[in-house]
Image (cartoon, rainbow, N blue to C red; front, side, top):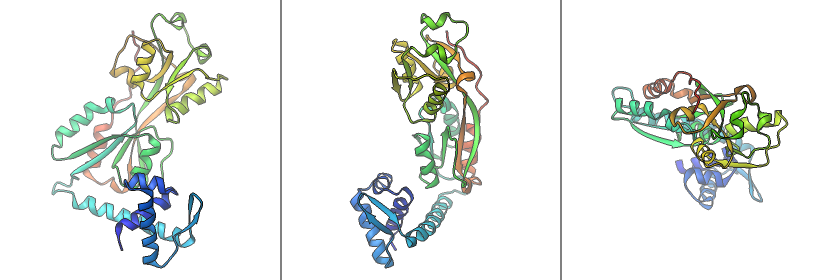
Length: 297
């Protein structure tokens, strides 16, 4: 039995999409479809019911999908064990960060890398909705970001709480107000994170609670881009306090926690990897104190 055929079946069954499985395995959709057909012929079973633009697992396919997941997980753990040296450390780690977090953790990642010179590290930027399935499938070893919910086989450890700040130029009309609320920003263009990210969902929910229909919006992928747009006078924006602390700019900021709320930054990893020394050392390196409140001038 060809392992490639099993992997193709596993990811199509899990994601319910030839395209998503093909993107993950870096193959074409026709190639994935052919591998599944070969597996069906080898096993003498039908794994999917074929519908226009849709594949639906058969009853047999549903049973085999669970067994395939066990097999692939065992192979992943076997490969991990084989790559460990006598010191018990894996030789390679892959970690994914939310878009605004790599700079914040860069000093700790650098220190960890210097203290483990034989460890090969791959650092990726992935949205939480992308990182969780990658972690579950063993494509990455850990992820750091804002995760509301994780599957039962994924461990989540809180690192710190991030607070949202409203930012605007020092000479902006809002600078003269002693106390700001979301009601004060209703008539201004907002520079917000691109949706549907956890940050954007938090902000959209807060605006909705206060009855604000934000129609004049400029979207940006990171805090750094938001701050640059605000500096250029394109609007007022919201950024995480971690972004403010690492890159001071000539902007005024106001902590909007009372109106917006906070976000928990966590590291997630597979429970089966908890005993791995490399994983534990990496997690220990990521643990930070809660950020302090910062004002920009």
